[in-house]
Length: 324
Image 1 (cartoon, rainbow, N blue to C red):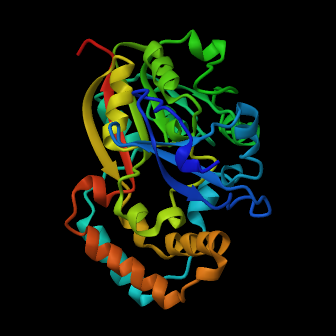
Image 2: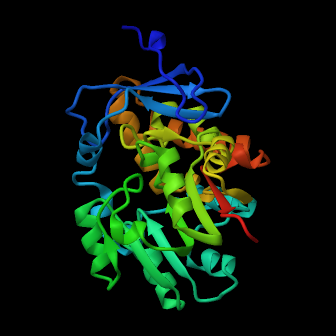
């Protein structure tokens, strides 16, 4: 059946969807010939993978995933920087007003007071460890067993399970802050995830949720080859509008919306990954390295003075559970 004729409903508003994109194949498993269909809700500015996989299928998508290597090793890997890249990155950095989701940000959000913090989808625990070192009481949830062991090796309390079906040790807790950092768009039921997070928060507690920003100009320019579009692991495609909506559905009050992820879009490592994606997805459409570099310069020109929702690759919301 033609994907455009399939009848799926938006997970947020239950309204109709339009077919948006066919994603050719899973770049992590290029031997698998299956393609994936993405649908878009114009009302919510929200996209989703349809039909939805099972949780068991989702778990299998993470076999041999990059998170199985400690983040310190990944971020310390050196990439040779050309003179042109140094100029491009310097220009992007001078135009970058984004704020990272890190321990310093959360420490400031709680006014530097020792707080209880739960990270749903904590990965290898790097963020939680940094918060612990600042005097906070921390706990994490991580579904991937290999990655979870990396977090436990840091001396952290980290439980297995999924954010839309919390294990009892997490579900019975109450926290000042719940963090979802690049996790919500990986979940089968994002509404339930945010409702679960709401139940964990004390009155006045904060949800800090960051996702990929699917209104970014980089996605518009590159389509399926965009670095942050990773089917079938990315099940939900959020924007600032849809992130606000899912938070409101859960009864949380938006305090601020931030954007992040600009300078990295112009670095050689980012270009290299996007070129590798193109080679996997569209081997007959390969452009030269010079052509790919030109595309990156064009993106810089297009986004230098753009609105945040077009400029940055990620969007973050901070929302409160009633009270102050």
